[in-house]
Length: 217
Image (cartoon, rainbow, N blue to C red):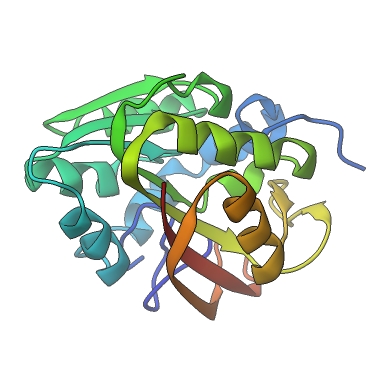
């Protein structure tokens, strides 16, 4: 949920842990279900530069996945640009909101339900995979690579730091350094083409550093 361009960026808009990954972490899911109206208020703005860059890098009419789509505002922007858009989230309320956007195929799903063959021209994982445990993160990145066509694009937004913890709202996060992320991406077969770091105020009221990475399969 770290922002970009001075607004919350989970949707691409100018706006002791035992669970194995976010999509089955009931405490995190409960927060997202409860906070959907706050998310919608925070993300009512034009698409961010990073989202537009992702859209423009996809072939015309290409198929994309918004992995951890929230209420689907980024997915809707992709659909308006003529892309074929699948959107998944672990929050039933977020999926219901995303499904209301024309051209968006939204489903309730986990990070473990990505296709096992080349399906997408782009995967947009914008501050969603930071909810996966460290033990599962590399596997999810590898699954993104498998789901992409050759030269397909992964957009990844993460928080920078160390360790795993819950924020004051109860959401589970795993933190990485830029070097750790680069290592995981490289080992999965990705080539990093762009990255940007910054700091911003999040929904829980904390100012935390973030990184946004674009990589090619």
